[in-house]
Length: 196
Image (cartoon, rainbow, N blue to C red):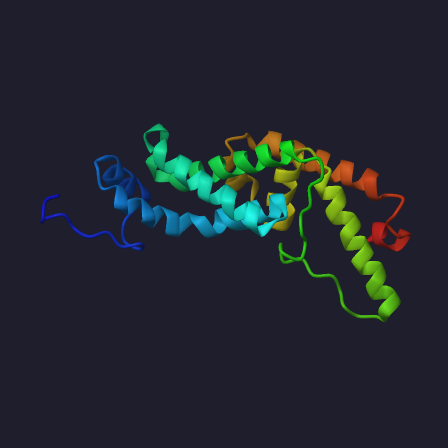
């Protein structure tokens, strides 16, 4: 390594330059990409698989796979989206291998109104469990689109970038996920909730 190489900092170097340096032999710089993207990858994996340990394992495996296949990243400026897709695909594979999936709405930052007495709180807790179970029963593609749009608050443009799917296809997935959830929950949702 030449002594004239400038040290990398997390803030002042673009992803494309880091990818270029890693591919040129400075593999230790991959840690910069890991620091930039592991948290967002973990949050998404946690919402998809519903288990912190499994989510951490998936992210670790995705980052290792990303390192090994970094030369396959066609647009180094968008390496974050490329890594995210690797992790998202691993989440889908994990969900396909499981019969029962859970997505925790509390982990996703969705809070139910805490006003009311013990009966109301029990009803809200049961409704939350029912909703989590219904989301977990969606096919992995619909679940991922629904989670990204409604639990993570992503725009369709961002979803399209990271998932590599057209915006119209994503809108259809989210629509189909809502329809399936509505069908699954229609008999359980109080009438006043459907009017809101």
